[in-house]
Image (cartoon, rainbow, N blue to C red):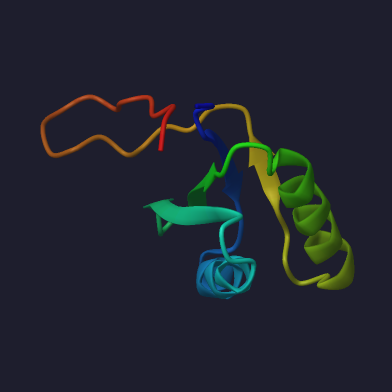
Length: 92
């Protein structure tokens, strides 16, 4: 069974809730997790085979909603836990 993939984005922190609700409307596409609310960093865990659909959706959102500025990040790093090191997350 193929593993899901993760993609990270940075957006305005006030827009995180909007993106989460939009993704919930595309049931089964993926799950949004907030990694750093202050910086607006989120991780999307995608269902296998949904990469193209998510890319199209994110591109359309960025074009249609000019106030939604999405920046795709190269790496998904969670903020470090108290007294710990940041961990790389690569699975769902």
